[in-house]
Length: 121
Image 1 (cartoon, rainbow, N blue to C red):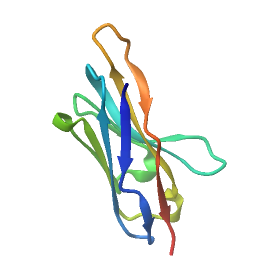
Image 2 (image 1 turned 90 degrees about the vertical axis):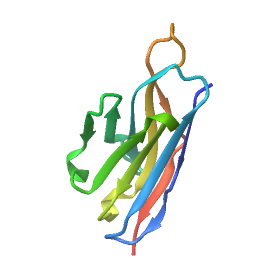
Image 3 (image 1 turned 30 degrees about the horizontal axis):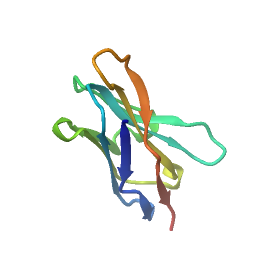
């Protein structure tokens, strides 16, 4: 029912920027939070940034000051502006939404398919 589709990944040189987008569609009653996680080869998936419906943001320490998460609630879309990228940012980035698909449904996590970000010269 619920689909999260990411876009904006690609290859960028160190110091460059990318802007990721994630649009949620389908059966959505309410979205509590949206965010971004990433997973590098051989590593566990880790939180990058999240944003609640109330506007509270959370960033992992390594991206603070470089990444900015924002949301367009009318479009059920979350963005991740990534600046000053380093090779350590290379990973598959996954969109996450904590949402209820219906009034009676519990809030649960939904995931996008991922978009690859590669930072290399």
